[in-house]
Structures are given as C-alpha cells and as structure tokens.
Length: 156
Image (cartoon, rainbow, N blue to C red; front, side, top):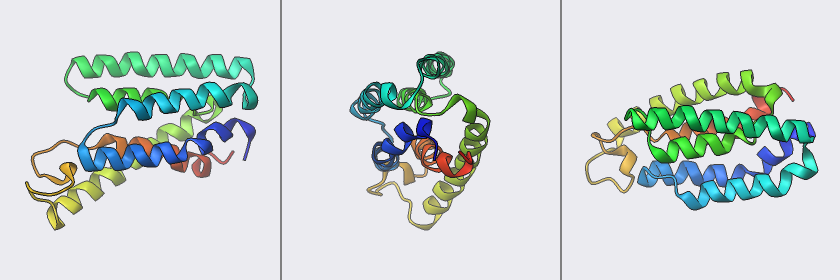
C-alpha cells in the first residue's frame, strides 16, 4: 500500500459508521463528516506531499460544488453531498479513475442490495428507515463502500 492511501485506510471506521447510519436512519451525521475532515487535516501533512494535498482539496471542493447543484435541484441529499466531498479528500488523485469505477460498482451493488432487502424484510415499520418501500436510496452505503474498496481496486 502506498503512503498516500494511509489516510483513507485510517478513515475506514468512519466510513463504516457512515454506511450504518445512512442505512439505519437515512442520515449522515455532520459529526461524521467533521471527523473525516479532522482526520484528513491531522494525517495529510504526514502522508502526503503539499501538491497532493492541494489537488485533493481542489477535487473535494469541485465535488462539493457539483453536489450542491444536485442538492439544489433535488437530486441529492445534503449528507450525501458532504460525505462524498469529504471522502474525496482521501482519494489519491492518481486513483480518481479507479475510484469512479469503484463508486459506480458500489452504487449498483448498494441499489441491488437495498431493493432485495426491501422485498425480503422491508416494511413501513422496519427499524431500518432505508428499507421502507417509500424511501429513497441510502447513498452513504455506496460512498462508504467505494472508500473501503478503493485500496483493493486501485492497485496502489
């Protein structure tokens, strides 16, 4: 594993918490996003070159801006926008293409899993809000899954 992937590996517990929270409550808490930001601020200077930090900040800002447009248009939830933008800080710029593939695969897998679970155990009274038939998709599941799988799929 390359050193520029270390901050992402350290973020794994936060990504798991993001997925669980979004599946359970259809909400990504601001505290998790802030913890991810804090983790990046603490780990980045030790693991990354200044130019890589600047590039990651730029990518994160771009993802946030595009996500904000999606939020305003009613296409994305606010927690998803913040969570994805925070995750982008942890994605090495050399791994953006593998991340796009991994995120796409995680979206497909997450949607299939969610729809399957809704059929199997979902109901309006489920303890898991995301399993209610009339709810949207908990994209935090795919965001977290993409971040967790990237060290394996990027080949770094």
